[in-house]
Length: 284
Length: 348
Image (tube, rainbow over all chains, first blue to last red; front, side, top):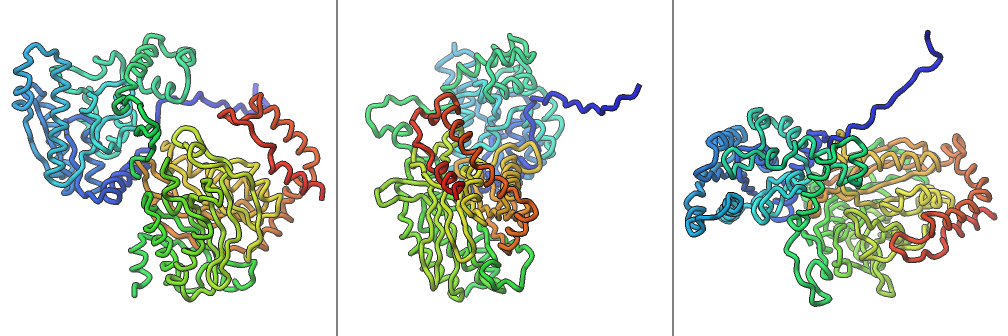
């Protein structure tokens, strides 16, 4: 029987964090030009190209913002790094047309680690990440460029990075994009599918993947993170149908790593303490 | 001598010209220019120079120089200055003196024109404000009005109330081009502000703004769309022109969306700049359109008639809001002077 009413029913909003990749590309290339050229008078960017999707996206963005000849992609394998990562990094350099440098960090890392033979794999991974930063800053000094960061919002929020390692570059175009948003942007930019589709890995330990390390998929973590950042409580999110174990895991990681998203905690002595009383924006 | 195209290159300006009206002679008919640009952070001299560049770019165009030139919020310093406000703050009268000199140098053929410009102000009692002035330069130089921002956003990325004092009034003032009001950025996000300005007689509302772009789910940042909607709703409800000039460029990772635009009194979008890039929008204004719009949709008159009922409700809400009527930071609010102003008007 036909009703006199037309019923319009709204779907519950999808809480996966979305982006319009064309808009984000425009916004981030403007950001790179503005921060490097206009503000600092620097025309060259230096990107550590790992073979993963984050650094690939940053390399593509920098190439479009500054021109490929003004971007240096540095591959920095350690002797245990995956050969596949090195090959994917070469693919990014070839696709973008940026300049490249291959610097093996094995000797530098091993020179120190020889004195610490019992170091855990986490310690060894942190040394590698910090060594890569030393290389990036030094290469930047060599060409009067600026290192550009490649850490995404998911790993920043989950604390899944080496403090004063991955997070060191003074500018970061993708730091406010969740991993799932980085994937969307990567497809739009033309990053090769083989790089987007493979499991994300820090490649600091053989065979590791981000999602195994974290104990949750990025797709799920990003939805939970997004809700937490919007201001929903753990109870709200569980009430919306998310498994308690996953929500607790994400919340625990976020709470345990606030310190990694800040500069050093400094003892306040005076009423002129830097960044406490003496307040100036980074570009002042 | 630099030509028009050279000046545009110097200033990095794209000029967008809305439809021209050759009959523009009466004070009710004039052209305004909305300038969006990226100031150099904390460099007041460089930013005055950019203001001069904008005058020069306009002077080099064929036809008359615009009658009113509108600049964004915090044009002389950039928006995010935190504890540096005092370093970049200026007395309003000193700003007018500098603008007068810039006009003489860069737009020497124009006898007089008006300027709306946002800047950090230090007043005679050395208090700091986020302000915008309305001044005439040229033959009839004078400071017509200073608006001090009332709604100081202090949440999320914003921290204004920590560094500047809150303004206390939404004033209207007579100009050679109609009765005007200025609202700065968040002032205009509250429908009550545009309502007060319109009830007090504004025919045109100027909005210098600095809006960080955010919300990238669609083809344009969400705040651009929101601002357009706010302006269209306010303009059509009250039958006023609304002219918005926004900062562009990045400040410490926060990119401002320009989208400088003029909305007419029917709520129609007359002209709009892109949301990025230094741009000047030129657009004609005919204040007669205000009368036509208000005749077609007498919403402002209806509102005025209902004020005797609404004002008591508004005053009651002031006591009820949030349970305390206090500000979020716990400081007690003064009795709302704007409410008294509306009341006075209602008694007439």
